Structures are given as C-alpha cells and as structure tokens.
Length: 173
Image (cartoon, rainbow, N blue to C red):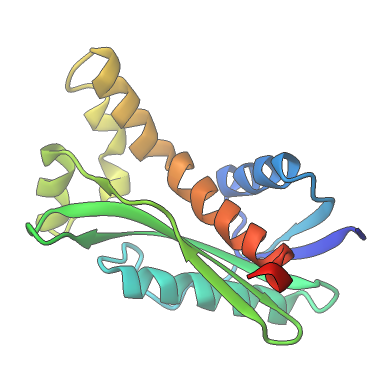
C-alpha cells in the first residue's frame, strides 16, 4: 500500500499523536499534514449531531486546504445527554477523500461524573476544569477517570480505529 497523505483538521499535538498510534497499530504508512481549521460548531458541542458536524467540517476544510492530500480527517469531541438527562462524552472521526467518499464513526460513550455534569449544566467550558477533578480525590479510580476525561484518548482512538478500518477496507463493508 502506498503512503497515505492525510490532511488532519487540527494542529493539536495530542490528537496528532493518537492518530499516529492508530496508524501504527493498523500498520498503515501515512504522512500526517496537520492544519488549523474551524469546526463550524460550538467549542463544546452538546449533541452527537453537532459533534459529528464538527468532524465533517474539519475533514472537508483540511482536504480543501491541503490539495496534495489523499484524504481529510476530522476529529471532534463532544457531549450528549442520555435518556436520564445526564451528559456522556463521545468523539466523532470523519474521513473524506477526493472522490467525496465520506465515512464517519462515533466512539463509545462514557457517562460523565457529577463533577463534570454540574459544569456542563452551568454552560461552562469543561476544558477549564478537567484538571480540577484530579484534585477531588486521590484514589486510583478517580485518577483514572480524570486522566481519561482530561486526555480523551479512549474516545478519540476508538473513533479513529473505526473510521480508518471502514475507510481502508471499504470494499468489505
């Protein structure tokens, strides 16, 4: 397989590194070209639909800006209320290629602890508080939850895995 040129709709180092990890796990040779783009949605999407739209917008804009890329990739983290009215975190990853083929996948969802629920319900930006949660308790599980929600790795890598697998083996799906 040739080396893929991926226009990634972010310059955020953590997301770039997560993409590298997933590409390595899938044994995909790729050149990642990060580019700053606008999501076209709020900075803290509060529905899965808005989050997905942000990932699509990022993928389209990245591909538009990087003409030599084979595909654009957008990653967007967001939140959505479940049936009980509580917020869950999720991620959407979208791939769009030059033939306008689009594949979008949502990660698994994770119920946010009450600490985070309160912040989201008060319409505050959660990113300003994620490190504070790590200070609430020092037990192993609280620390694990805090790291998961601060770094968001499981959600981003889950969405990336699904999108890349379904894109790269699209003839099988």
